[in-house]
Every structure is written in C-alpha cells, then in structure tokens.
Length: 540
Image 1 (cartoon, rainbow, N blue to C red):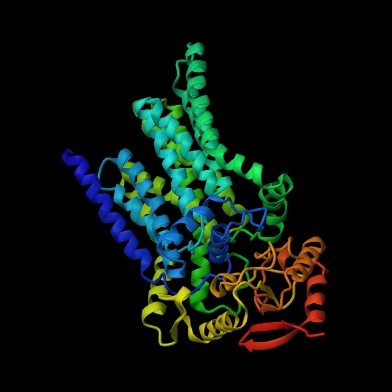
Image 2: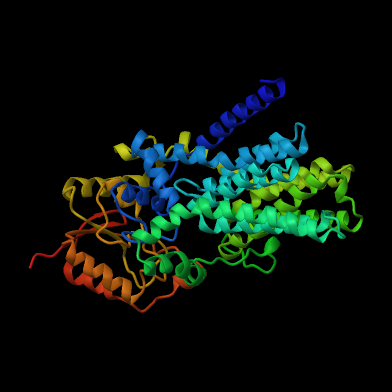
C-alpha cells in the first residue's frame, strides 16, 4: 500500500471516529414517538413475517425495514441499539461526500465537507429513518459517475447504476432523483464537449453511456420490484407508493415555505431566543439556492467562454452536483423543514467548499465563510441543547425498562409514559393485540406508535401508523373497527397528540367519527397516566 492510500484510510478512520462521537453525544435524549417508531416498529413487523403494504400500511420503501430488522436481530431490539445503527447510517453521506471533495480538491479542504455535513446531520432527527442511508447510496452513485467521466472505465458506470437502484430500496424518490440527475448531466456534458461535426461520435457516446447506466439501475432495482409485485396486491402498492405520496401527502403534510427574514410575520408571543432561531432558520432554508445560483452562473460563464475544456472533469462534477441538488430541493418544497432540507443541504455544502477552494479573491471567500457560519448556528445550538439535557439538566429522567435502556427524557413526560407502557406489559397477555390511537380521529397529525414496540404488543390493524388523509377516512375507520372485532381487542391506548396543529388539511376535521363512536360505545376509561389513557372493553 502506497503512502497516499495509507494517509487517505487514516483520514477516513479519524473522521468517522470524530463524526460518531459528535453524533452520539446527546443522542440518548428524547424519543421520537412517530417517525422513529415507523422505522423500528416496521422493522419489528417485518422480522415477525409481515409484508410492507400488504400487512401494514406505509409510505416508505421496504429496504430500510428489512435491513434494520436484520441488524437488530443480531445486536438486540432496543432503542439505544437502533440509534447506534442510525448514527452509523448518518455517517455514510458525509464520508462519500468527503471522497468526492478529496478527488476534486486534492488538498486539505476535503475534511471540511465531512465536518459540515456531520454537523448538519446532528441537527436532524434521523433516528429510525431511511434518509441517511438512501442519500449515502445516492452520493456514492454520483461519485461513481464522476469516476467514470474521469477514467472512462465502464465498470464505474455499471456500479453507479447499481447503487442508484439500491438507493430506491430505501427511498424510492431518492433513486429517481439520482437517476434523472446522472442522465441529465451526461446528456448536457456530452452535448457541450463533443465535436459538433462528429454526430456519429456524439450519438455513439450517448448510446454507450445511458443504456449501460439505465440497464444496471433497473437490474439492481428489479429484485425488490418483483418480490413486491409477486407478494403484494397491485392495488395496495399503487395506493401506498403512488397515490398516497402524490395525492394525499401534499395536502396533509405540506408546510409553507419560511418567509425570508420573517418579513411581515406576526412574531408576538415568541421569546427573543425563539425569534432569533426562527429568523436564522428562515434564512438558512434558502441557503442551498444561493449556492446553486452562484455555481450555475459560474458554469454558465465557463460555457460562454468555452473554458470548461480546460478542466472537463471538474465541470462535470459541479454540473452533476448542481442538477442533483436542485432536484433534491423539490423534497423540501413540499414539507419545508430541516429533515427534508438536509439532502439538498448536504449537496450544497459540498459545492460551497468547492466555491471556497476555487475562489482567488478574499471578498468572495469572506462571503462563503459567512454563509457557512450562519448555516451552522442552529445545528450547533441544537446539539449543545441535547448534550445539556442528556447529561446536565436536573429534571432528566433515565428510563428503566429494557427496550429504553440508556435513553432519557424530561421527568414529567417520561415517568407517565413509562408507567403506561409497564401497565400494558403487565396487564395485556403477550399474544393479545392492542390499538394505540388519539383522543379523537376525525383529524390526525400523528399517533404514538412507539407504544407498540415498547410494550411488545402488536397492533390489531395494518394501520398502526395513523396517517392524516388515510385514517381519517370512512373506508379506513371501518376497516379498523372491523379489526377490533376480528382480533377481539380488549385494551386500547389513547394519547393526546392532537394539541399540535400544522397549517395544512391535517388540522381540519374530516367529519368522520366512526372510530370514535365505536370506542366510546364499546370501551371505557380504565386507567390514566398523565395524558395517556388506557381504555378497556366493556363487559356486557
């Protein structure tokens, strides 16, 4: 092994160790009762033999459920183990981004790409979520396409297609984003660099590149597609993978774009600290667009001046990152918050370090440094808060149950939560099904489906995730009521969880009260633990 490779491997080991330490500190504070639970309880159902879409309703690609189930079967089904796995997944995008930067920059700027993306990763609640591993495969695919452009070895393009297909195993839309980005970049780059008088050569190059990439993307994705089509009714696949994400999700999960600088927004009732946080967030949301505009203008000037031929591979990677970043930004345009902004932010941070590296003048460098500092303010503050609450806050309560070992929360919330969990575990037989819902179901934001995993009691229905626009409909509520009767459900848990509202249709009543009427007619309040209510079937 030569000296450069040893240095690279040592750099990777050091960066991964530092990244893991940063993401681990403070990771044991607070449960995510919804998003994290979708991942770990979905994995639990898969481990028990259930099929996504057929046996339980979900919007997500199945790969993460199976991969997480495989790993937790080995190391144990606890929240702390799931979070360690999640942290490892979180390190995949920054390390592949580092390799892109290392290849392009060829100096000590590359580690900053890793550091910046890790800091932003820590700002997002990615425990139990598939975004990091899907984005990791996506960035790897981009890196391999870059290597093909540089070395012209078809093997790199084949592996780029395979990793694009694997991306779709974890997030279907991410696979589509990467596929479109690579195809568009190859088309534009070929058009710009090919000899315009050599039409046959241009067509031949496109016929060589795009089919190879496309074929191996399809071949990689095909096993999952065939498995689902052979085992899950097409109606269920269509409803959960196409109709619900495209028609229902935008109506009930959309969040408006933050107003830049909060101009014209009523901020009365907010503390000064919260005002500053919202102010910074309102600016940072548009941070990737600023980077893309600058990169787009630079690439445009390269084309006009015909300077891209002097560094064609550098032009290609910037073009590919620009196109993929813009396409990934569409995800944040529907649900405008940090978790959905992260994917495009990670790509923008790679490009920002490239801009800083390429800048020859001091003034632009100061602008780029300013952008970096502003973008990191909230992530660093949030991580500091998590560390303080985990290890120094006086009201921190460490859970005692096995599934929650090494996890803590504020005492007032945690004690009642754990008491309710222990009551179900001690009262309901292990093979008996339960239902975890809300005080009312004509409108829903989310439900506490972490309860199913922590009590080790399965949901009586395929709708363990009560999604607005789905569980609020007459059809689904009738299905849930039928499941109550079919599974002879004796205990249900009702949680508040409706005190939160979002500016979308999830906050509006559907006018459907079938489930609520059935609960009140057939069950009675049995126990209360804070806001958690245990209802028991009435004895006739």
